[in-house]
Image 1 (tube, protein in one colour):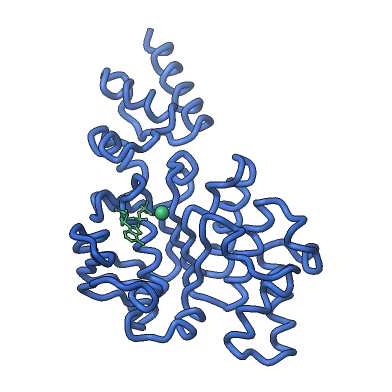
Image 2 (cartoon, rainbow, N blue to C red):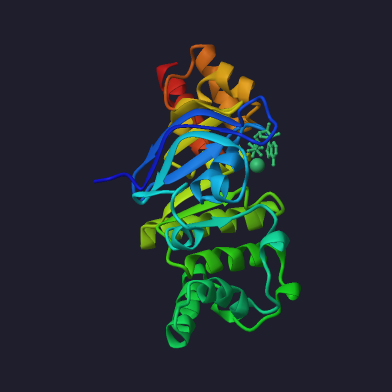
Length: 288
Ligand SMILES: Nc1ncnc2c1ncn2[C@@H]1O[C@H](COP(=O)(O)OP(=O)(O)O)[C@@H](O)[C@H]1O
Ligand SMILES: [Mg+2]
């Protein structure tokens, strides 16, 4: 099957910049994947998100090379309104992306832009709110909502356009740990139950690692790793270079590996680590 995202040798320079924000990016994503994208500030993560949804190059000047295909559409040659029905975006700051006073109007806004008929619009708003689990917020004022609720509204507004892909650019950076995990769980549900391809940009590796099968790492405009989080977190040189905050439990087991006392998979979460430690101590005790 044709991949849902195909980035081919993509390079982009912002206006007046001598250094490319992205250079020689090749990335293939199959429909239904849940992909994490990480890397330090300035790595090019947001630039890649903007290239996927067509803001680059349609609304942002600069020089580009290569191409970005989403669901068979060349994003540089496709009107943004058409792309909006294929790929939805959610950004870091919920305030900056919400325009309406009331939740349902926020969802209506995008549908009006696509000239969806009134009755269908009502249905699609209801369905999107259900999918995101915020049907009870339909008539609430956006101003009264928490940061996490606002991000859910932004996600629902994207979902109402029935995209095949959702790109989320650090959607939890303003949220507390509980709000963060709620958003990630919601994205997992949208991926599993509705087959929406998810690209989640996230610097908090401890949030991403246990929940994504595939992690792409960007540094200085280039893809420097594309593997499972376990494989990536096993590489000490790479994680140091990227400044990734390796989960403490993972770092501990890396030490145990180095010391030659542990040979299993690296745990990514505490309960996984507890299990492995129990097994390790159990097997040592039975040998003694
Ligand atoms: N509007 C812009 N104009 C010029 N340079 C930019 C602009 N936005 C980002 N950059 C530069 O492009 C590079 C990549 O930035 P960005 O994609 O925002 O990285 P990230 O999201 O990983 O922090 C950085 O060097 C940044 O300074
Ligand atoms: Mg960014």
